[in-house]
Image 1 (cartoon, rainbow, N blue to C red):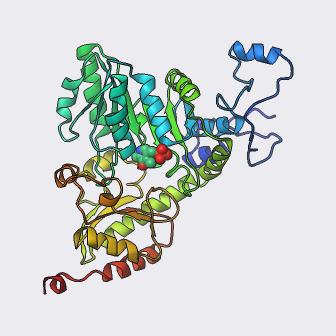
Image 2: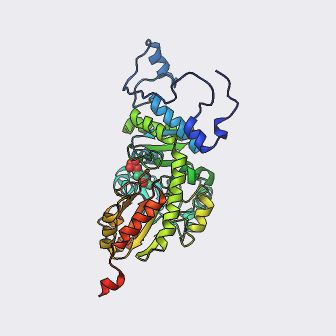
Image 3: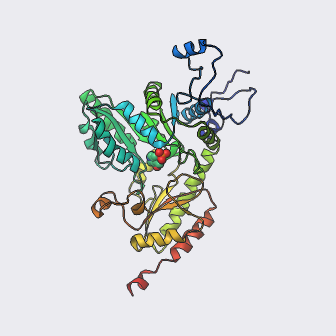
Length: 412
Ligand SMILES: *Cc1c(COP(=O)(O)O)cnc(C)c1O
């Protein structure tokens, strides 16, 4: 084996995603084997002793560790630029384990209010059972955040861009406010960012002062709507704590999902670049469609978060956009049912363009007051741009929108 002279950490995101740490010649399959086993044979009982002494190279049981899962984790850590990363069975397993690794009974969490529905409900319905209180900070009034920090505050949790209005939270301003609050109170706060919508290609929260990245690998990292997974990336010390939760809450990744993820990561940069391009082109195209009342995309100058997005989304503005069409929820249904290329399905981040209607999905059963508080209107359609030919997508949306009755027809 030749000694590598190129430091993998110095290579581009694409190279890291494709090769991981393996920048040297050695004999092995190019694609990693799927180690589909629950347990491992010991050569002799000394292996059990070595494991008990903490030797990381003795495999014991797949809930604790697995070579295919570890392969994915090493690659994810390298991509995210963290000391370590952990792969979970889903984004929610990653988020719940990371939060419960940081906060105990009597502690408090501060979050921005626009969150993925699962995270929101975990905070609202589950954390109170653990005696953990969640308070919400207004992302438009981050000057108040540092004053909200107390010694009980253990986590500040943010998500940006947010669902479904594609709102932007100023990550650097959050980090500055938290550090100021820590100085004042002596609190020790873990700043956690859900980077699912942006991905590491478009936004690096670590460079903006975040301590831990959580992410649903089901979305852009997996990218083909065929696997479930979640990531926690951060310091070795934090990941050790999260790993204890992974072991005992049991949210371990399956080796086959890890294999699919490693395969997907090889095209991650290409896919997300194309999704960025398609989303921007589609946003600009839809802005000029008569029956589209609004287009929300951080890459548009009209977006209220555009200036902050330009500062913190250094790779691109992401693949997610939301439009509001004429005719309220009925109009949104007509458009979604008429699309032929774009797929009417929840979730996001895959190679196929997906559409969903927030009032029938993420924001179902909310009162008009709650909807307006979240900035959600009935005519909204959330679009996850895929990697199809952009002309096909434009044609598809144009024909689907053409089916809406014009304003004049409706009035008459
Ligand atoms: C999907 C999603 C999650 C949850 O991930 P799962 O893999 O479905 O558990 C968390 N955060 C965001 C922003 C998501 O889109």
